[in-house]
Image (cartoon, rainbow, N blue to C red; front, side, top):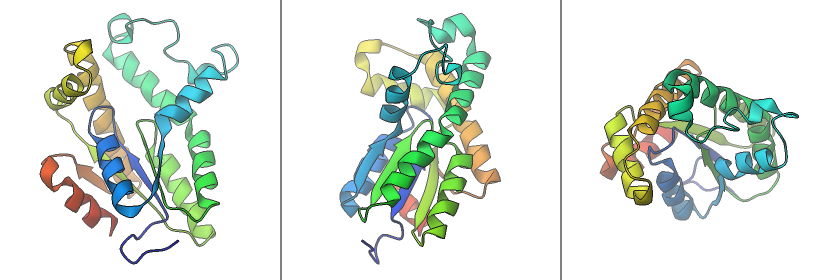
Length: 201
């Protein structure tokens, strides 16, 4: 199902928690009549179907009630990156499944790595399908914290989580650029749809 106005069959949108990628993905999917996959659901399913003993790479935060305080920012960031890398094969499985049907799909999530996106694009090209990937970036912890406050008011201020997410966003952006993938700053939000479209053209 191709469209002159949609230069992709599968679109991958990566970015750290709280940067606004789910909202951007939903708007793009709605405008294109595309199916949406949230990788957070895939990771949750993997974790529910495994244990720390059998699949430790999927359970880096098992047993911690407050990882930011108990582990510290540096170790949380390291474990977040390690978790993302551990689910690369699952991400590729999702993409292969979406490429097997003629329905456009937007796949988005915190755990999408640029390395997995490049591999997915290569597999799609071998099948004559069009897969594009883009990473949204927000490096300001205060802005991410404000997004959390709007999205999760019942949790109160989350400055430590926001700071780690901003660092993870910087890491993702650097990795994406190193792999030749487009990186789009989230702000200003009112022009994000147009800037995303330009990056994917």
